[in-house]
Length: 96
Image (cartoon, rainbow, N blue to C red; front, side, top):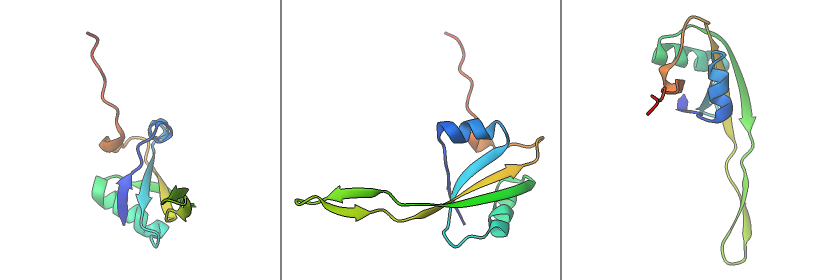
């Protein structure tokens, strides 16, 4: 169901607002995604937003033949304000 978390500058900024992004299976539904996040991280899910991301085009081979990566599905999960998912927390650096 959940393939991997999406760790980008934007997703880390959203994590501060208690919204976390995951790459999910293409056939995953919103209720299944919510239950999977609740079970895996022990948090209460408030909402799930999903979107299908188009695969990028690429060129390959001697004649620069055009190819296309597979489309994938992204889910943004909102949780209760008093909870957090440690996977998205940025470690603090000590001054040297």
